[in-house]
Length: 263
Length: 236
Image (cartoon, rainbow over the protein chains, first blue to last red):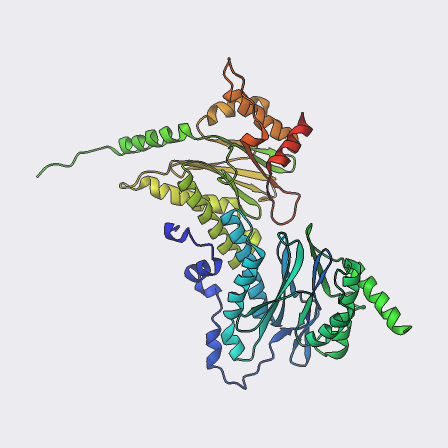
């Protein structure tokens, strides 16, 4: 039944906790488990974001691993949040998806109740608290970390936020990458990044960064030409958010491979 | 010991109905029309932040009239219930019929309470793509929680009956957006106009939204004054 005192809140997580706590994960239960408990959970890795002259691109490979096995080849790590924001999540797949889903619902819930969208900074701050909510997972060595990217309509530019496991929120002004191949991708982006780079140059850099990550890191998946599985590349500009079509991504990889082959 | 007054149930119900009717008489109307791509919702409302028509969930919108504080609480509660259900199951499992039932139960519980006043509101729960049989449904909920389904058009507010009579004559199926808006505006004009002074609807005096079944997941669109003006100019 509807109760007037809950009308005021715009926090969906609070509502979920009071209405149906069984749908909110309580990771504290994990604390009783032995440290040597088999922990081959499905894990997603490399995700990255890069700012270009008209906005920001956020991307991720499609592979998830279970220990030393490939657990999933088509997993999606990039999630659209509203018309101008998206997150990409690396870490244990289950809680990653839950965090992304909860975050998306929360932002939309706020927008509908208030009648205006939640600001970019507001979204970035709220994500902090969702990351912090997974702290007891971290204590078990199970990490869930997002990159948050969006187009800021007020400042008229793309922005990137990274997080630490304690919920710390830090803004990056050019690029960032996390996950097991994150460091490799970051090295590539570091060399290729230019201020005010075009969208085409940014897409090329991201494809190269993902290639290098897959080359160096066994957990990161490269383009799968047989199954036609390609990394997700999502572009956010003042006109909104859209995925780069698979054919375009395939073409970009093709160009890269041709260049690598012929030096 | 004094004997308590006896009041018949019929009388209690009649009193409540009279009370609510007096409130609703003043309420501005909202017209909801099925057009080619979905549902068009139009209200006479010059305010730019206090809306009568709002998004509830992907395919569902709510149009309300009467006391703002009362329907505002129901609007927020509806969004909340829908989000919880969609999060628990699947987004498509949130339906207009389900939401209408929730509202109906709540509103009728209040209307039947002996120590509270009934809500002075009327609601239209609007939905597109809800069923394979119809491309849109409108549920009209009254102060006592009773509701009915409409498929072509529905009106809430003080002069709902008079407007229904006009639309019975003028409504056509498969109208384009601009023609549907024109029809709603004309209807408002004809009901407002007195013989001496014709009444003119302008983009600044109406609130217009639609549920467009052809667009992505979120079907709800609220039109800005400029957008209303543009649609309007196309029509004339």
